[in-house]
Length: 341
Image (tube, rainbow, N blue to C red; front, top):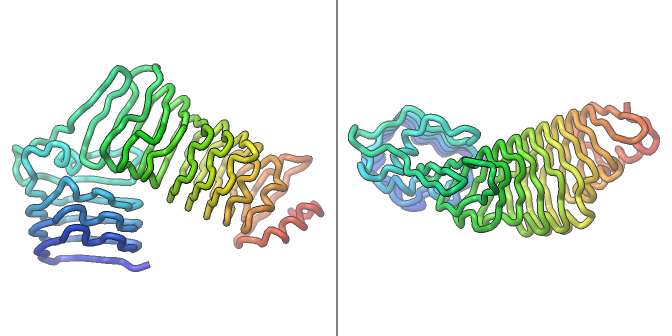
């Protein structure tokens, strides 16, 4: 995968949509002076790491700097900006010190003008409080009353500490990454149209009928969480590139929950999977570590299967230490003969 690196350079202009549809492992802009950065330079760029460190940004459309950025991680540190003194929301993003649970890091940036507004705008209703910094909105529930993921014009939304939270497609047209943490029960009815990444941490989830219908996710991640129900057609015709499950539990999928679903990679670690129906036949590549599975014969419908220390909840446990993906028919033979050791 290619890299794009600018280091110790005087750049006149970074043009509008400069990296649109550009695909790279890494984009780095380091130790440089940029006279002007125009609208949405990283729109729809597919990049794992976007790094901007030790630069001088002398002007430009900073409020759209990260609009539509599809970076798995963003690291913006030790940069100076000639800020719009009245754009509190953008300045607040640059000066952010801590974005918990989010793979975007801002550290030791500053506005050249000390008087520039840096206070993040705030919004609240009867049960939710939100703080806005350009491209990133952080919200938390103020009480135990049912809440709805708010309609926000942002790329990244973090919501925490909700007793009951409903998620539907009205959460935001431009929302690309959603993080939900420390919530007692999340009911997912539908997803925002352009959502690409959903991460849930220390929460319980229920996927309602058609919840992820036609969704196109690059990442669906569960950490120390539980999905207690996959209702009918929950992932109907959904496409998921990476389904990641850590220290979590998935259970009770209706038989048609995964109709037409396509999952490229499924990784489960220290997790439990109970009555998952046709999930495994929807996956190209299954990797399981230190996990348990009921109805293990369904695992054999995956195209590629690799596991280590896997408890199959039948009459005995099996252990298989594998370094390579095995063809399912080989594993099927061993299971039937009870010879996995």
